[in-house]
Amino acid sequence: QLVESGGGSVQAGGSLRLSCSLSGRPASSYAMGWFRQARGKEREFVAAISWNGGSTDYADDAKGRFTISREIGKNTMYLQMNSLKPEDTAVYYCAAGPAKELVGREFGFWGQGTQVTVSS
Image (cartoon, rainbow, N blue to C red):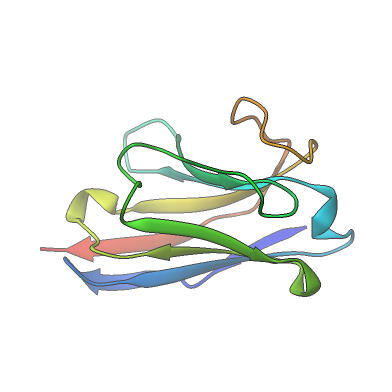
């Protein structure tokens, strides 16, 4: 089970840190990632990290502003989001597995999402 937390409302230029906890199996078994879906739009990729943090992948819009990381011992992944823009407003979803390495931004397990709202 994947559970996201850390969402909320922030003004443009602010920061938020999202967390994703995996229960039921060791997070070190999987690559993990973040996606988001804005109202009326399709879900889009944000960032991903391999099972040991050795590889990361970012969407162009996330590069330089967002940082993905993980703490294997805590079975938790994070997304530090800085310099937030109103267009970052979306429901953010955590995803994991089944692969350990990053494979084409494809994931098999999904959380329920956490809302991020950025006001101008």
